[in-house]
Image (cartoon, rainbow, N blue to C red):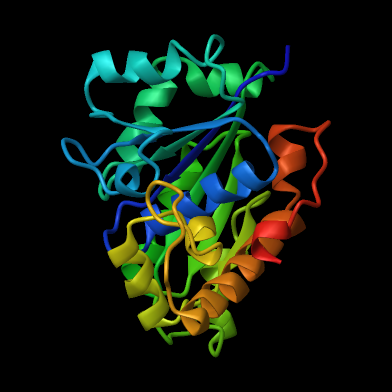
Length: 252
């Protein structure tokens, strides 16, 4: 039996697009026919659950009972991949809890595949989280996700500043999430459907919809670029080594 995979998507700073990235991951694994479940820690309501209600459970990741719902079921769940969308401010404390319960040690021993998608915004406050998070990461797969939620450049005009944050953590890999057209993003928000459903012109119940052809095109192009980044870091090979890793129809 293949070992379970857990992807933690989070940041301590708010407003950096954590849930957007979690949504692209769920769509990506769905396109690769990799069974996936998700936990939304924006208790009690949750944003991720609005877009993926059938796959997502809302939990309070600070509560021991809800931690048990997630981690005690890894071996028995039908899903191969567990995506955890960590609410703002809880990344560091969640990683500490995973250390305390021995989860990171299990990952180090190869019993579980564990990856952290650390979502970064273009601010020094956000980038300063990197060193703190890396301190408890151990041998986990650590991805520094530059999420372009606006037209800023993550200080690439200043190599000294850029390198001081992005190049000092050994083993960390960068992922770039390009900026999505604002109107296209808002249309998906209003539709409350996964990105792939929007691209496919499908509604909440998979019925035919009437979304803008232009905005669907922008989302398709953007999602293809995002998935291209996931292909580049061989994300499917990481969580499911034997599965085909070149399925791109939904975003192609």
